[in-house]
Length: 87
Image (cartoon, rainbow, N blue to C red; front, side, top):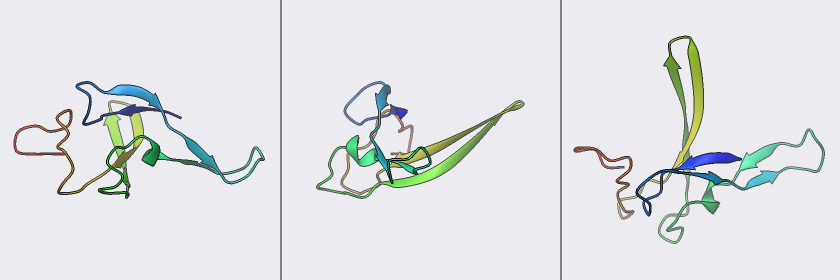
């Protein structure tokens, strides 16, 4: 699964490959992304949250699944932070 990673360690987003977990060996097996494999500081917060975002641009509709960590002691993400909002 290709995705864009906005890491706290980098100054620009990067295209990366996310691991997938499969529920079986058949073509109809369910697939689940494993974002934990991409995030740092698992000892501080092992949990990964997600939300779905829909962007409407003219006649086009784009849907994204966003994975993120949210913890008081995690570093601020300068790629996503702006003004008084820290992510």
